[in-house]
Length: 622
Image (tube, rainbow, N blue to C red; front, side, top):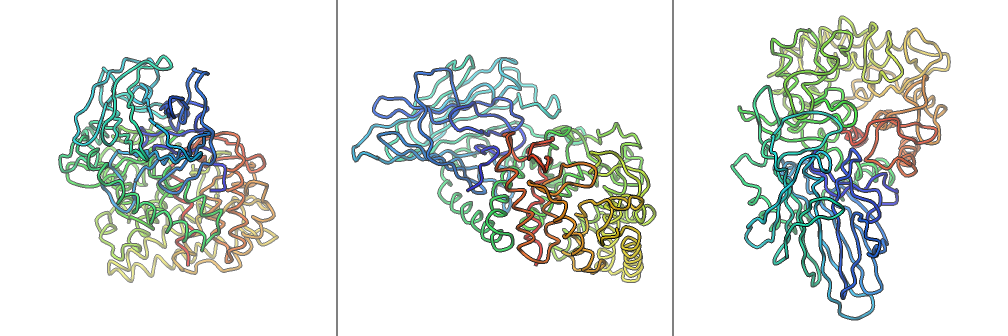
C-alpha cells in the first residue's frame, strides 16, 4: 500500500476488541478511540532483545528497524530487520463478510517468521504481553486477574476484570470491562503474568524456529441487550466455547488465510478496474474498519442482528443514517448482514414505544439496544424524510440484489406508511434535520428532496414486484413529477443545482441521486449529472470537494458517491484521489475519519465509523 495509512489496523473484530497503531514499535497500541490498548512484543535474537510491537519505558531495549508496513483487506504485514535477521509479522483478522461465522468469531492472528540476513543460524524467540487495558475501560480502573487455559495443541493464558458486570453500561468513548482476553500460541510456550509499564499483564514466550502462530481472542460472554434480553454472539449459536473457537481457528489458519487473500485480491482487482489503484487502496483500508464497527448476534427467534456502533459520534446503535452510507459493501457481498442492521429498526418502529409515523433514527446506545436515544425522542431532533427515505431505499436495494422481495413483504406495512410520508413531505421538505446537519438545519433541502424521490421510486419497485402494478405506476408518476420539479426549481444559472430551493448560486453534493444511476430509472437527465460533476470540479480543494457551500469540510462517503455519478473513469479518479491524498497526509492518526476539512485534510470529527462501507459504491455501477 502506497498510502501512509492514518492508522494501522492490527486486531479488528468488533467495537470493543480493537487494536490499532500509528507507529508500530514506538508508541503504545491503542483502541480506535485512541485510548491506550497496549500489546507489547519483543523478539530475542541470540540473547539480544528487540521490541517489534507497542512501547515501554525501558530505553535499554532496542526498537527493531521497520523496513515496510503494508495492508490488504484482512492482513497488515510489517517487515523488520536487524543485523542478523529479517522478521515478518502478519496481523490477520479474518472477518469474512461472506460467511457469518467468520464475520463473528472473535479470534485474530499474528504470524511471526524470520530468515537469516548474515548467512548464519540464529536462536530466535518472541515474548508478547497483553495488558489490562484490553479488559478494563481504563488502566487501573478496577483490577484484572489471569490464569492459564488448557487447549489441546496450544499454550494459552487469559486475562479479565475481577468484577464481571456484563453489559452494565453503554457509551461512545468507553471500552469493555467484562469478559476475557485470551493469548495463545501453537505448540509449547511459557505463559504467565507480570507487571509491565505499571500494568497487570499476561505474557506468552516461545522459541521461533522459522515461524510461529499466535492468536488473540476475546470472549465477551454476552454481547448485546436487545429490548431487555441479553444476547450472545453469533459464533456461539451451536454452543461453541471460546476454547473450542481458538483451537479451531489455529487449525484453520492456512485455509482461512487463503480465503482472505483471495477475497482481498478480488476487491483490489475490481476496484482498480472501476476506479484505479488509489481507489483500491481506499477500499482495502476501509474493509476491516467497517466490519469491526459491528457485532453479529441472534435474537430469541433466530433472527440475525448486525448491530453497528456510531463510533465517535454519540455511540448510538443501529443508526439508520449510518447504515445507509455503509450499505454498498453489504449489498455487494452479503445482504443478510444488511438485513441484520434493519431488523432492529423494523421491530422498534412496529412497537407501541415508537409514536411517530416516520422511521426512527436508532434503537439505542451500543450495546444496549432498547429503543431510540437520539434527541430524547423529541420531535425537533427527528429526521423524518431522511430516515424514511433511507429505509425504503435500502430495502428496495436489498431485494434487487437478492432477486426476490420477501424482505419487503415482511415489512410492507411500515414501508407503505413511510412512503406516504415521503409523498406528503418529500417534494419540498419542511425545516427538519438531515444526516448532514453540521452547518445547521435547512428547509427546502434539495438533497432531502432527492432522497424522497428515490425512496418513492424504490417503493414503486417493491409494489411492482409484489404484484401491485397499478399502485407502482402511480408512485413512479409521482416520483417523476417530483424529479421534474427538482430540475426546474433547484437549477442554478450555471446549470448546477442548489443546496436548498430558496438559495440560488449554492451547491451541495447530490449523493442521493446515485440510485438513479445504479437502478437505471432515468428520472434525471444526463445533463443533471454532467453539470453537477463540472460544479464539483470547480469547487474542489486540495483534499476533496466540500459537502456544500457553507463550509470547507466534507464527508468521505458522500464524496465517493458523487464521484460515482461521473461517466468516465478519469473524473472518478480525480475525486477519489483527493480522498486518498487526505488520508495519506492527515496529521490526526486515527482509523479513517469520514468528516474532514478539504483545504487542510484535518479531521473535524468521527472516526472508525461503518460509513466507509459507502466507498464501495463505485463497484455497484456498470
